[in-house]
Image (cartoon, rainbow, N blue to C red; front, side, top):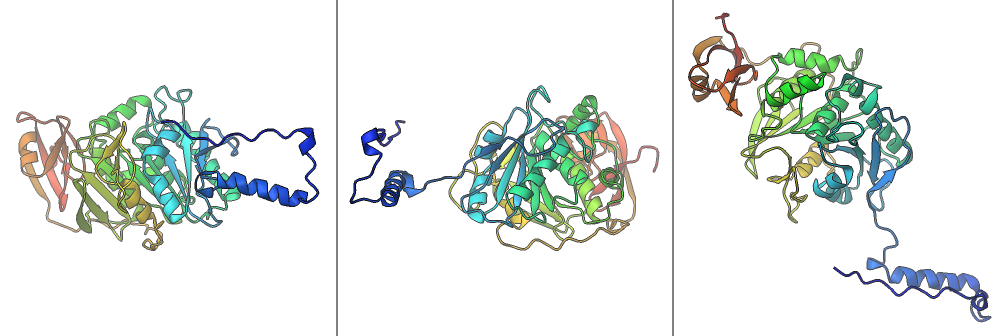
Length: 417
């Protein structure tokens, strides 16, 4: 599409440097500026855009920082940090995720961290490398530096900083919540993985495609170990997962739920369930401490919903899937729409346990367990409902014993019943 541009002004000659006697220099300058503003679209001299921040402080993870500050952004406003997925970059995530709409509408800043093939061959954040997922080290420390830069230079409210990401960026979002609970008030993990599910590349593949046999307490201990001695409140967390995701299988959302409900000190049994647009089921845990959005039939990607309605956002592209606007729901969960999120409380030393029910054991084939509602299958493999314990291939030949320890919560109990 051709772009109409104003005809450039003729450079002034030496004869024109001195203004006419009837027109004083200050007035001439004012008229010139007014004419330039008049020919700009909408009369605006500046429009906010995504810009690279060349220097933002300590950067041991070799990341690049981009920032978006809506026009008229004042001091004391919130900040959302966005972390892209593998093969993506900051510009694409900014363009398609839908977050810009709500940054403009509700007046908050965005910071987008970007990694590169120099760090990871697929441009993934290294969520599985211990040197990048520890407090004060690697990529985690670089993202923390970006937040510190925003607080110092944008006037960001340090009490209202949030993080959200997709896939490897979602896993890195969980890393930031675990390693810097004193920095982030809440976060969102899209198609991501639990903190320290893997500590090597080999383990990363196992985590992505199958379950890890850990209890909620063990998952929670991994987060508590990320910042030893910390006694303050842990962030609230929203989790997004497609039921047809074969890159990061749905059991990872269950493990994330177990991890963050345990850290927040609430039950792994949902306190409420809602049906939303796009085939989405929302389960809330505790006093809205943790949210789990499960999207029927959605593959691997970030949920978006192109359109002009208040709850629509984003655009479709690779790994941006047309189902529901996750940015809208996350922004409201964070309280960025002017609403007040539930009060943040310090978790109790002993997490709340699920309601007590009489133990029940059942021995059946993996197929029979799934049809009876004690397990589910994903990608041809079977997992115990609730615990996510791996049970092997989904067929009528493999047999296991499951024990119910809470409502809708079964654990692998071969030889224990």
